[in-house]
Image (cartoon, rainbow, N blue to C red; front, side, top):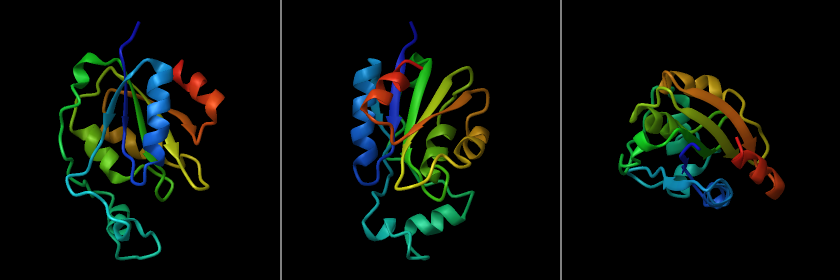
Length: 153
């Protein structure tokens, strides 16, 4: 039996709620990916081209700092990584998280929340940040019964 972790970044709480349900269904540990500088409401205003999230997402090399790097990933075989979908990809803080650890040989299963889009190019944009890992699309906005199916992956 593999040891599982649900790691998530949540800007508004929606992804956190989903992560907690998934962790319970999968019998997994839970870890919050937190930015060193928390996002404010103004930072998340995607309609403002100068907002923090807009600037980060326009710059593919952007790597927002993490509040900590103590996820103790060595003990996990499978890591569910959850995030809100921003501009059809994962927020760049997810790249920061992946690049902060050695994921070689691990299975990463993505899950996300979105107001209207799917994963887009999330897998493609995250692969270079986790060399040697297998990254799989899970589900976006899974309903309750789908969370149980996702937990079985």
